[in-house]
Length: 401
Image (cartoon, rainbow, N blue to C red; front, side, top):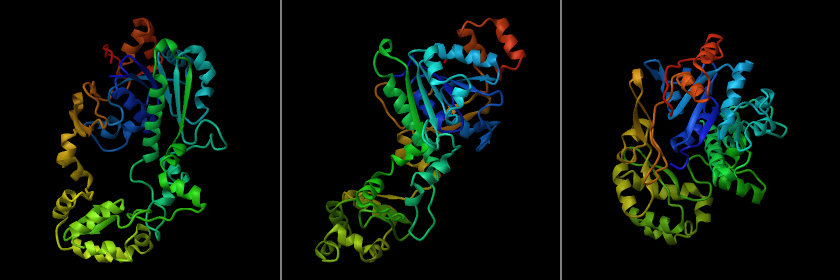
């Protein structure tokens, strides 16, 4: 893989940072996760089996773990030694926390002039809100994202998944990967700065462009499209169907499948602007037709006719879907004494050599001894660090990544 041979020091926890570093690890990087002696808080969240949080496992595969007390000078010295030989450092503390630990960008550049350091925070490294604490829900609220979700008469709605954490992690991984491009000998110190709120603002799409052009906020439209009609959910004889006739050509295909081609020349519906002006009228013409057959039959007919359509699937239904299974979007990972863990697969397929599952999420501090030995620490010094509580967790694993 393209990131094989790249070593990443991972000072992140919860979601945004671990998602970033897992992406790097999936593409071949050697990611060393630095945890406190009590571990990443995500180890204690979500559903688990046999003492393992599957939530944690799903964001920390392909990594090694070292548990260090970074409040001690000895722990910081171990970290500094690791940074000297690394290619990348990723952290998601509140802006400025790393600098208070003596690891400002200037100090990091002195330690390693070729290092790429990536900072992930709620609002970015500078600006009037840089020091504010933030989580995904705050970023969703303050990015405009919640304001455009939901029905017009309802309160603003959050996404069901921590979308700002995830997109910030994606952008961070992209920024790191782009910065690593080129020959290593030509690299110099780079700082990548990603904010959760910035990341989510970047996804506002036509909501942003229309607001900037028209000077007024967009209205919430629920499952309807804010720019196209008809488009959204329609009730069939059994369950709702999602249809997406996104332009006049596909609208014509829809009407052909429905047997209502005369509506193409109906003066109420012959342009998208007219259909948008009265969504309820076009819905009243076509929804009764959907009620005459099942969702599955309509999906077959519409897809055959070139109209994008699909069912509204539950999460369990998604995992049983033949297309999802064919694409291996759920994988089963042997996890030692915890048994097999099912988790989401690799969404990016690269051939001939793609992402691979090298090893499951690590136990807390599992690789501390191996990593410190590779740094040149003697067995006696490692034992001293353990005895003093600077190095915690497991430590009998001597293998590398």
